[in-house]
Image 1 (spheres, rainbow, N blue to C red):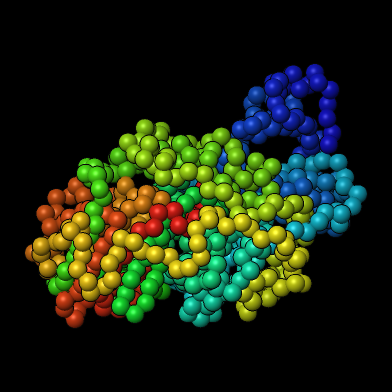
Image 2: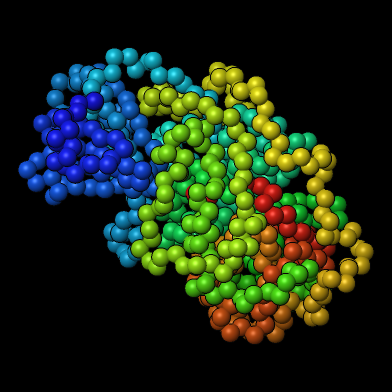
Length: 599
């Protein structure tokens, strides 16, 4: 590292910086830059007679990682980002070392209003490194389960184009497992040695995560297994959890590839929050849900639109229009267990935004990270705050006290490992993975990973082993306790129970929901609603304003458990978008049972 005397540090305004250095430009070695690192930002400016004109400040909260690497003979430049660069000397023999820092700040969109995360890379030239092979490889930390058939069949292309480089930039090694059949992911996680993984990441729609969660709950060690952090990358057509995670991060609305970039950024930050799971009891089996339970109109739209899967998220619009043309009424009995306290006023979009923004801000310092190196502030998300959204600033939350009591600090269940992997080695490892991912085994092969840490992770709580109990639910077929409330009407157009904020990328179904609020957000629409009113409801749901759109047949309740007993043969029930049969069923929420990577 080439440093100047302290007088230059004072000249360029770096008094009080934690670290300071001066580096040359990788393309033009005659240009020199002064770089300062503080607890919250990296500041870069050219060393000149007027340095303030070239000053740039990058928040560490927007940084996913950094790399130091040698210049490869004959290639030149930034091995990670631009193999064709010659390092500025033109002879292809530059022996200098380089380091790159990767940021994803909010920037204005090119062709439309608003902002979205966009990549900014800063590369600096430093002194030569004599032996790049001295860096050590580290164990695989992420298992990425990818369904190449999800959505429009582009999940693999999206991963390689957007996510793969981001993980390399952040120094997050991974193993890619390609699923090739139904319930493949369920089998993988049921048999995997989870001590080798810091997180399980799903690159698909919501259905693959449904498989993963139920595979974890089928293990003998389910109580420890389900606490393995879960990450989501949108690769399907609905992408409801990905949209919810993006919403919880306080970021401006995003769709498509912008949503993928945002979720990739949050994954690299690695912050973990509790995630509620809902136990769903059917006559012959039991399932665990993280997203939703639907009967009637919504379930039929989800299933009927499967034939339009190749058009992506537009499938739900087509399915909605077709089902509106042949609107049905579904007969059944509905009952639920309300909260003990009087429910608060239904959340409006404005107050819901305040709640969503207040929670992560209030608890950002308490949330753990799945990051294996807790000393790394850049990757573990220990920076004070994220780059602000261009919209309103956080406001006080009416639910902060209750949320703070409920949330608490979640201990990490992974042992620390070193992270000295070079970018060149990471590229070799990634190439090896991509050549062998089609028939990947449930766990990493000995050839591609060191032996796992022999010390198993401690159980997160001392609860006895055995199946998870549902104390709020009597056996199906038996009478409900008096504390339950029975809905008098028996003719419905739809029943929808939400456990996250979004039903799809574009439907903000539960504006006040949080991943760990301990609630089931229950909506139902009775018979008699007109097609126009129902269409108005779903159009307002895109803005989270459906509770204020004046549909008289819409009812919203916040509950802890429910029972649904269909009485007519028509109509299906879906759990997280998956068909589960005609019912009856009952469900109970288990607060904070799992863990979610949500930045």
